[in-house]
Length: 105
Image (cartoon, rainbow, N blue to C red; front, top):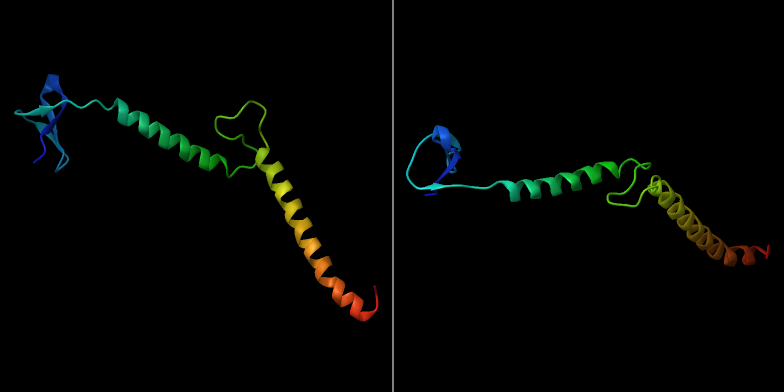
C-alpha cells in the first residue's frame, strides 16, 4: 500500500495514490515536490510544440539562431532538386541502350 500524499497541509488534505481520492487524513504522509516533474512536462511540451511547428514550412527550428525562418522550405526545394536530378540521370542512362538500338544515337 502506498502512503498518502499531503496536498494542503493547512487543511489536512491528502491524496490516496491508489484510488486518486483527495480527502482528510493522517498517518504516514509523504511530501512531494512537483518541481522536477513540471520541468520534465515542460520539456515534453516543448518537443510537442516543435513537432507541430515543423509542419509549418515557414517556421524556425527550435533553439535555432535568429533569422532561420523558412529553412524547411529551402530544405524541401533542395531535396526535390536532388531527387529530380537523380531520377533524370537514371532515365537518361536507362534510355541510352534503347536509343542506340533504334539508331538515334
